[in-house]
Image (cartoon, rainbow, N blue to C red; front, side, top):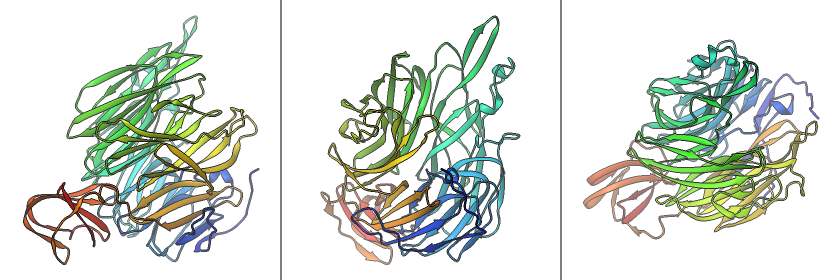
Length: 559
């Protein structure tokens, strides 16, 4: 039941929050009564941790809010916020996106710049700590959040750049008058940074044209006879890049879609995700029926999966992209219901392993011997990042409905630390008139085994170095929370490598002989490369822990 709480303002203050795990948080806080109704909460609000251990939290608000002593915001419609806290939990700065806006993805780079993406409608005022706010406008005349945006901030919360995009109805389809323009939409669901490029994965309907990006939409023609027909949108997907500095120069990296005009079939891209290790981009998508995958090297590949009311084949395609070279591997499964619980979650890279998370029906695509209980199961798959071959796969195995398929699992977050994966999510009851969240869950996964543990409702989780953050939500109390923990620093890929000898002077490291050096952060992202170098300076990197490696030896350093 929705709750109505009348209040003039709410305050984000430090308060002890009891973690529902065995460990206690290093610090925590709550944001209470930022909304009046439970469905105004952003139950997918993303979080991030930068290289210095600073924490970024996002969320929604329909009531006035104060964040620490640094910001006070009054909403316009269901607005969004981004807040930064230092390692001790003190609010450093916050900005608001005032208007109908939802933040769906976040990432940081080596200089602790932060990037957010999401959806918007109408006019949205994007805040900046220097008060040089920017006004963005979504698709004209559309009240729903069918447009997407990206915003880039520096480490001090100053807005560096913004980008907004939306799709248009295909001209050929529009000429028939048998389609609704309002259904065209685009949603960015994951961001990843590598060098000077920001990558985004997105699902869309309609035609998408942004800078050098020109993606056609796809449509299914429903023929009712007697000359009466109607076109419905088919979801396509892709990954594109933009300049991290300016958010300009959008360029395609991967595109997956059906033939533009279809009849009688329903091919679809159901989900897409991406990540990087600082050098290589990894992506995964789920598709049905007949789809064409256009790759970064300009080549294309057609996939065709069984499609019938009682047997729907689904393909999970994983790709790595580096220097224009694309390596792909196909995994398949078959579902026996048209209802789709096949969804991808986060992808992460640690050491030589690519981790993929998501939900599946019937047989797990990465190991067909694993069968979902009830409607679906969440899973984590560990793949060799070079060959993309599975090393192990773990599933929840949760009988969420005790045989009732009106209950399904929803995945909200995945973290990876020292080879252990943690999946967070909840069980949702889907029966008409009775919809609602019935329980939450967390699973610790390693070497193919998933172990259940207690957890609050987690909207997102992130780890960088020794800092782990959970963003939480409580629909009954109409509040969100931040819980920050200290975890062991990842040693994957480091413990088996010999120590490198270097002389340190300030933030510069000197070597006895020339070396090809790569500087990594603790997430395994390559941040800097020097060739035949007798010294390497970390002057341009933010405070944090880094690893210097020549491929044979390594050195972990603190700046």
